[in-house]
View 1 (cartoon, rainbow, N blue to C red):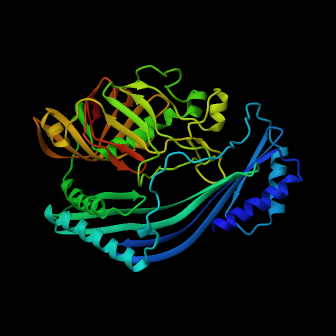
View 2 (cartoon, one colour):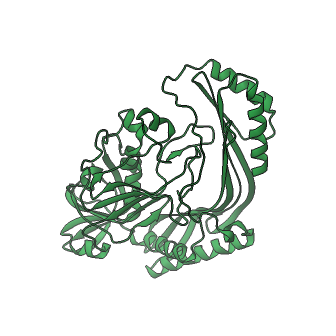
View 3 (cartoon, helix red, strand yellow):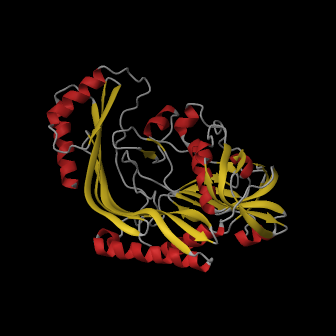
Length: 456
């Protein structure tokens, strides 16, 4: 498939040469996906699918156009005619700096797992079966009379990406990933509860997979008979997964130079200033082995590098792609990534890593130190948090009420709200010792004071 992408890009560039195009950029992705679905503990479907898609952007007198397609057999002349027509009818962009070039690789990490790449369907079925067994064991340990996987999918992807420009430069990379997600439901004493598991990594770490699957079974039982609590101020403990959810919705986009330039971030003019607790360090780290965001170059062919975004609470760097860096008379940080092959790059993190440089506690000790609080393991609505001002909100679906250092009962149906800069600033009590990976975010649990909860 890589050879097909290379050949297609070369033919398109050649077709564009005679059409007055100043420059062009090609971006292609490809791969093979094996997927297995389960419904009510029974294997339902198995699919093996080859995928391929490309995006093309051109510039004519600072008029920019982009198109995309999954048709890799399309006539390059037709592609060239179509995109040139779009460009000529587009407005000029006075800030256009040209496409990035001088492609090269930066930091390196392991992102291709040979075991995944060579995995057969029967092996994947066996792994899924074992995971289901671990989940049922976890439910049984908590006293479940029945634990079932109501719906779920496991999929393995093996593929690559290719970026090239009309200056004769190109780079490619290959990677693997495994995604497992399913809903667990358990019944106990006439009541039932559920829990959602997601495992997403570049490699198959069976120890972590067993741990997460077992925990899903336990948690599908632990929250039976959950109930609301009274409204008021509580100490809030977010497990690493819920911390990551709030970071993704309320904080991470604020580091984008595009959002800063468009006044959609509170971090404008904050370089060198304290924005979070002095106990916090935040890194953008593309060099983590098996990291979901690990890359040696970004989607513009610019080398990636490790960088510290927040050093003991002080903002030290933001994330640039080539376009936003040019507007600020800066150099790209190697963080230009695309939402799809046909979309333009935007500044985004690789692996967003949150660490503590100060007080660390285990989640068990956080509970012991809490007089009145809530420990949260599940939320909905957290995606409605606002990175423009850092406001946070979410409805607890899986939580525990804590009183005088002891967990009293499960909690659900109450709304928490606040501000991520307060939670990671003046209201931060402690952080966990080790960050946990959730997609491309690495964070420990956090403990926050004076959090408002709207309950019954």
